[in-house]
Length: 463
Image (cartoon, rainbow, N blue to C red; front, side, top):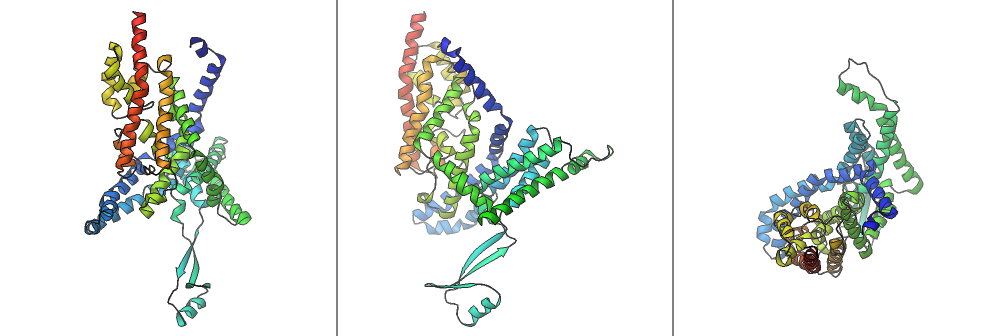
């Protein structure tokens, strides 16, 4: 093990992992997703409350209760629209803010410029189809006189009405996240580069700092926003489709589609563990992938459920919350299973002491005490279970979801939610999902147990 740790491969791996974990652009993407947590949790709470007040009562035939709760349901809808419904807008500001902050320029201006650039790419014409079934004669003539094109079909007449000066809300939520990331990244880099090259309006030193900063951002910000608008115009002119639709069709959907395979889920969960084994925070290192791909899948599932109240319509089987719900009980490595195994089978006093200290925090998925206290980091005794437990748990949950035994995770839940309860809430109060999470915890206990027993024998040999 020591020779392996001293090898050139390990030296190269650690260097690569360290650079990846500290690369400023990846850090900015990670921090932008983390910054959205308050609003995504608020939106998920609104959807979850509607499950209690509307969906469950309706499914049980208690329509009277659901009708009485309609005012609360409506308020929850407002909360959803103001949180998850505008995640792309929020992320656009966040990516501009964090990229600018990382490069030492005015972060507020960077966030606003990124926000404005993203809005400048959104189509400002909304097409509405109006059904005219039953309308005839003078009514149709009057609409034709207004310049509206009336289409005749088997089901009657209809109007395709295009309203200018409106923005479709579909571009503001999860569907627009990749566009917000790309446009926010491009516009922020333009703003940062021009600012650092001093292509700015310089004011006298007597001018208040806030005014000076605002004027300094005018030229770089204007250029960045115009470049974004130009890209949107070229997309429409050359392809006939909005830039947002092109990015969603040819970048976002294929990437998210690739992420849904079992192999992708297993590899990613394995890599998280591998980075952790060498003392690097696996989730932070891989956050641009986990949050950048599986995060939008979670938000899109939430949006689809809020619109349809039908879990069969959820587009993605595996989302960001799926990892936490089914393969992070007690924290990375499902170490709550290790703690239980220690309580039952360990004969090493130091392990029992660490287990007692770590257990209360492990119930809330905080496991740094056991990771560094056992230690598990760089400990060959626990390498095998540490690497294989999460992938196995992911596989069980993935197969259960694909088979329709449990619904996909579609609600954001605080990561400190205890095991079992997390899966229950994240799937809209699905009891079977909570049981699958508990079953995974039992599986982790079975895998950890022989290695805890082996550690007992090693201690005896040392004595």
